[in-house]
Length: 252
Image (cartoon, rainbow, N blue to C red; front, side, top):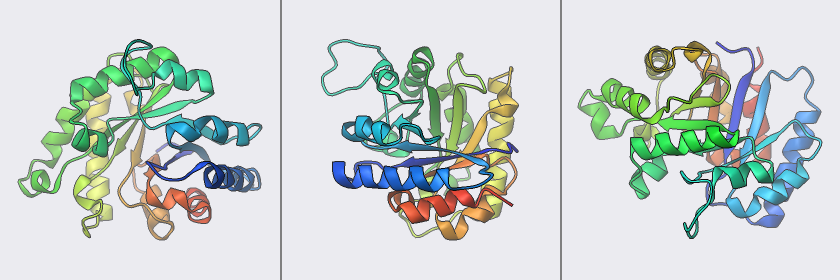
């Protein structure tokens, strides 16, 4: 397990300028006041707020990332944002292949691999998301589905420096079902083995994040499970107090 946890806040399509700036300011100040922090924090706001959030975080150790990027660095792709544009704004990371992108935008593994490769080419860390649905888990296909996603979504350009993998059990997001510590432990061990096979140089050092309904109440347990090197947090990242509590749970 990595000693320094990666704590990523995915704000999704939430917030306006004023509250986003205020939240970023509060988190930046809280992280600065945290002694002997054993975590790195990345905020991923909506695209319209990235510039303002980066300005607020200037001088802070908190980093900023995008929620998605296009496969191409530029071109006639109305409404899209390239990895190069995110890098130019000051981003360090970008999420690709989030379960919501896979579901609502029909994103394939090959498209996600191309987006991750574009992120790498631009100098960004790609946070590649994988995870099975309720139907797939019920059918006993969880391991094979995630293995296929890893094999096909991680590009050849992946290294331990430019890639993280986030496991999102889709069946445990907004369904009332909860992934147990054993569920997380088993899947993260499986992911570690598959990532190490896929990325032969440094695969064992790629950070593996857990991303299924992480809250302040369960963060400490989750963050100390083997092969959990951080968390990808959705709703709880919109409340600064809750999100910093999750980050601080890395200690101990």
